[in-house]
Amino acid sequence: MSQALGNLLPKLEALQQKALEGFEALRTQVDVSGGFFSLFDAGSRNGRLRFGVFPRDLLTVCLMLKEPALMREAIAFSVATIGRKRDPQTGEEPGRVLHEWNRVERNGYLSHYNAAETSHLLILAVEQYLQLSGSDRSVLREWADGLRQAGEYLLRHIDAGLFWEDPRHCRANRYMAYATYWKDSHLPGRRDLTYPVVYTLVQAQTVVALRALITLESTFELGFRAERLEPLTSEMVRAIWEQLWDPQINFPLIALDKDVRISGISSDALHMLAYLEKEDVPRTKLEAIVKGAHQLETPYGYRTYAPGQPEYAPDSYHLGSIWPYEQFFIAKGALLHGLGEILDHSLGIIDGLEMHGFHELLVWDGETLTTGGCDLQLWSAAYPQAIVDLLAGDLAR
Image (cartoon, rainbow, N blue to C red; front, side):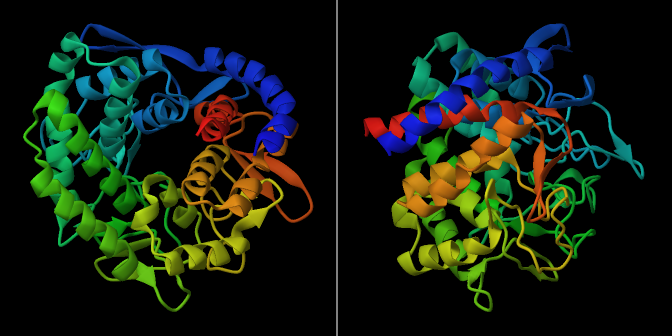
């Protein structure tokens, strides 16, 4: 590992310098009822804003970079805008963290609270912030109510060991977005989901968020007791391998909605390993994921979705393209579970970033690497520093 990191460092150091410029270009300030937050827009194209402030992107970057000042602003903003009421137009419900600050409308619905897992990310970011910075009593007072609501939001959506995304909680029967986890363009063959729906990646994120709530209980006294949550996390882990597994292709489901098991070889299976402990994953299941993941390999990291499947296209937003930021979580999962080959393939993204910069996504057609989406994306720019820290941390252990 030390030799691999040594070989990559010159490339990563050059990318880190460019990334700093990218961060500055995306810096913004948001006014929430007279309170100003120093944040970052999600992405731009040709120097013009394309995506504004998204807590999913902000909190994900916090988990990647572990930078306390950024974390504090992103957490404070998420708490200040957390759902307080039920709104069928925006998807708002109590404890649901904002998806998008700007107003985006489709068919009479707004995108503001169209994210299933942002509350999970808030909980994880707070846990990590306290590990890095210690307990600040003023911060605890400011964040405690939002954290409690986020925890209640998680528990409200869990039934029989599964985290169900269900718009009935906001008094609606759908959301503006076609899907409400990070791959939100649409799921293969399912532009209109039949709610409620379980996303397998979000199921894994729920497990780690519940564990974080147990850790945070001693600091915040939120009322989430270990004796209640620990059996629930065990039940949710079992559900991944028993209820969210497709025996026909020997790979995790992408999702399970009311009517259909949504199957396919997807990067979600590698991504979710970043959130599961080694003892959570049966060896036979891990081996099956590694075998299936060969279909996702490119010289520049892992595709979101494997060739030959319904709706696959190498330039599809979420059904075939390569997302730089996701390669960080794939690498993290590979390190956690001792998957050296997966780690090596994920690091191919470094060459892609070196060639094209911090684009939202990359497109590999088997011969040529091109780009798509924003030409500057926040969480792509976070990758160089994040992967250096991740690999260095692994070496330190």
